Length: 190
Figure 1: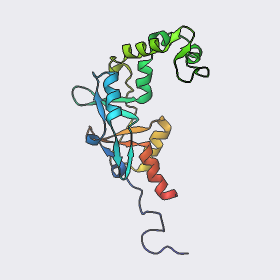
Figure 2: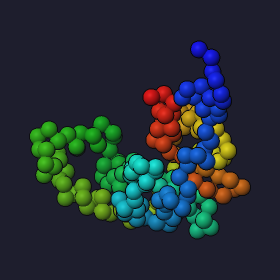
Figure 3: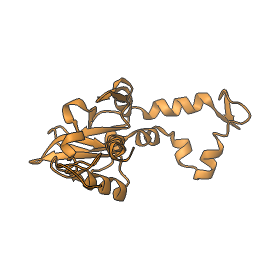
Figure 4: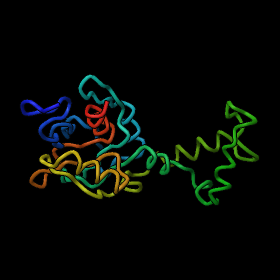
């Protein structure tokens, strides 16, 4: 079968670019470097991203300094790690995990031994005022709006990232998320 015209069925002439799927920075949730973990939690809880006809929750927040420069990102798991009470952090990982074996009590009324739910909540509350800078993840790479999507795929996979900032003329103009990139790839494959 010969190909007639510019495109073979289902295959575009050219791969789309980062600019085609990025979320503009003004539409993406962010916090300041001086904000607290509780501030970040509130922003995440209040944010919903509308991408095309799909709605999703952010897994990552951008973190800007007081000069409006991108200082890094903070992921949900970074926030949770920052909330971990001191009495747990000082224990070996195996001991920390054992406190949360909930097989006996699925309602978490008693976690383990002398560790009560009240003490865990107290520890979480003590840490919610920590600054974002304590758990900030530095930027490992950026993309340009003109980069091909396969470059974004390569960067995400090789650096184990789920979000990459898009920079043009030294200014953050948007972000590319792995969920949107995979959705775009699915358009070619499914």
